[in-house]
Image (cartoon, rainbow over all chains, first blue to last red; front, side, top):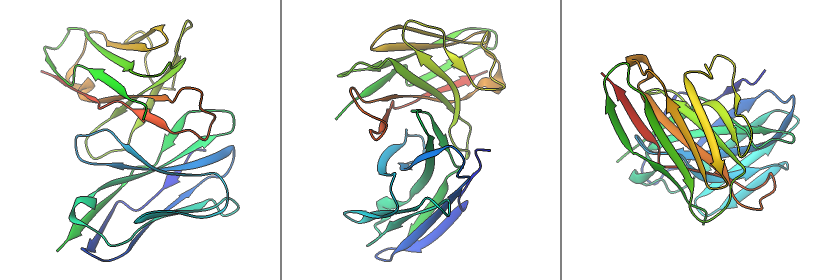
Length: 110
Length: 118
């Protein structure tokens, strides 16, 4: 199957750190994307992991464990503008197709 | 970076009419483009894969006769919603892998087209 699971909603305080988890079925898995989507807009690319480990990119970091079918997106020094939905998506071997999770709506509060 | 455009950004139409949505890769060629649909508070669902010069590949449950896809050039794919009904009201988004990219390259999304069928 293609099940990708992530929490529906999260709330965090401005300046804090938040971790958004994503689990997926590992069959046919190639790589894992994270996208940010503001309401009414198209998704924008945040990160891509294909190897195990943590990749840091400024305030955002993404982690992947291929054997566990697990990834997380870590957002540091949260800002109000980080309030958005965060979509976890995977690709299969030999394919550009993205299969998305339902997204996690993050609300950053003062 | 790579840019994908969509036109129109907003469409309001009467039930029974057909609506055409264009997806263009502005600074790269895309032999493959993807069409997604997103209902409110839900994630993106892949509808079909558009292939330049050949027939589109539709996901299970998507009616190919209702959602016509034409990928006539390396920079343009069109999605036509035929005989649109209120339940077709949704946010339609296209994407394309960047030119020359391997699988590690990101897909670039168009800004989306919001369709409202009255």
